[in-house]
Each structure stands twice: as structure tokens, then as C-alpha cells.
Image (cartoon, rainbow, N blue to C red; front, side):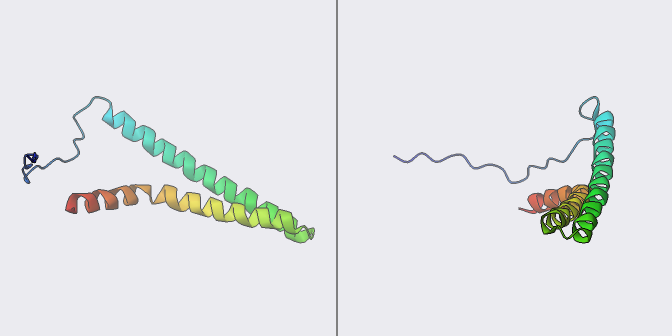
Length: 99
């Protein structure tokens, strides 16, 4: 005999609640500060990597120049991901809500 799981109702609606837990406002401030620190560190990494790339290219050191190029790309990627993180989370939240 096959057991069938009961069907779940389809009209469940749950949305984020910004006042359900104490400290949500402070947590939002902490996350914003972490994003700011992340962007500052990404810009610092980009500047240092550009300097390393320039020194490597100027001194005919292909290994150093290659490391500088990789650092520039990583710094740019980190800045893009950090800056777009809120938009990405909102996008995937909306995609998940439409499933």
C-alpha cells in the first residue's frame, strides 16, 4: 500500500519582517558597514595590484606583471560583487518567490 503525503496548501505567503526580532536595525547597520569596508579593501587591492603590474611591466618581470593583472581582476570582481550584493539578493529573492 502506497503512502501519499498530504497536499500542502498553495496560498502560503511569507514575507520578510523587519520588526520581528530585536536588533534588526543594528544588524542592517553592521551589514552596511561591512559592505563599506569590503569596497574600501577592494579599491585598496586594485591600487596595490595596479602598482605591482606597473612595476612588473617596467622591470621586465613577467611573473610580477601577471600577478598584478590577476590582482586587478580580483579587485574588480570583489568590488562588483560587493556593490551588487543587495541587488543580487533581491533578484534571487524575487526569482524564488515566483517559483
